[in-house]
Length: 119
Image 1 (cartoon, helix red, strand yellow):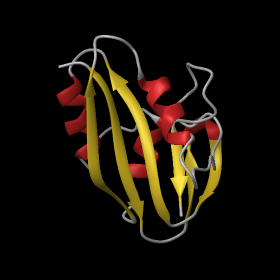
Image 2 (cartoon, one colour):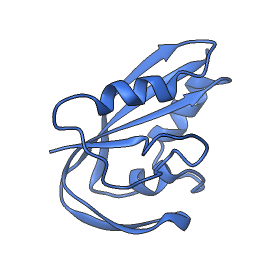
Image 3 (cartoon, one colour):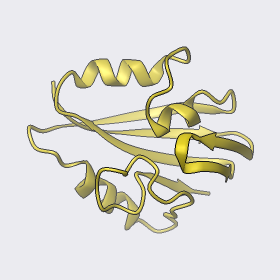
Image 4 (cartoon, one colour):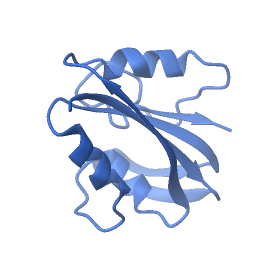
């Protein structure tokens, strides 16, 4: 299976975290929506995100390793095309959507961030 996915992540308390080379950031408690893609092995990518023990590789890994963060839902969009940016822009257009960390998960595209915050 291939396509894009959305991780709905609940952060139960505020937390300060280092996100690789992006730096250290203050994360507010609330709901975060992360948009990613896998044009190969989508199921394996999602299973990896669900594991707490893993090598830290992507920006999202830093957030997911927090004991205060939990994935509460996953939405999969099957596609043979790279559509994660289109989906991300749709999520960003929703009322209350905010970017707290620029370029989170989007270092290879022109999106402001692939992590969107909702209080």
